[in-house]
Image (cartoon, rainbow, N blue to C red; front, top):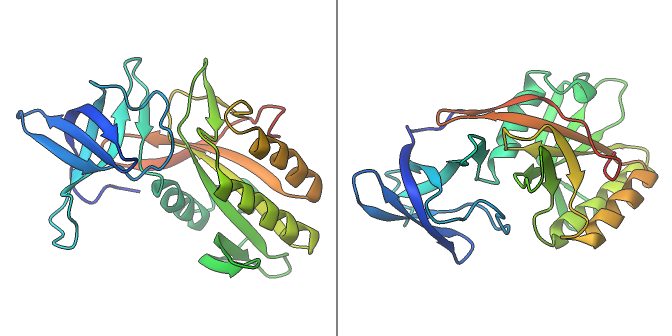
Length: 237
């Protein structure tokens, strides 16, 4: 997924009200950018962090910049926008880059399922069970090269586990893909301490037949693309 316009660099001043971030650009201007990330953003909101913003001229948008990428002091690149993983996974599904789902030819985004939900992707293929696929953004890294999810309590994620379990028990494939937007990660595990209810629900969902995959991304100031699979820790596999 390529960014629509060239990103501009700056330094984070503060992230606040969940969806706003003040950034000082290299020319000295201070701008307020949209931060498309409702999570806690642990380790990604420190003042002085190197960030890249995407400018826009859309008259419908109040904020003329969107925070897309950060680079940590250790050199790792991190995608900030939680809407990006769905775009990356969509491209990867069409390109048959996700081996576990490469047999499917029809990819339908945002389809209704369950009582009152929409699945990120519904996949169909001749002679194959329908595959209901949910995508979760991952950018938390607190220790070594462990990617972790979630970075805060996620009622929405908990709901999705339940509906995916229902689909699996009904005879469909139910797949949860953790998409890691952090180039410093080489493994994945659940953040039990941050949301123990979600971690427990993952174990139950797996018993019900939900498949769990993890793929990492290459992140740069021009594009974010799928790189390959990551191993899942015993708590998530």
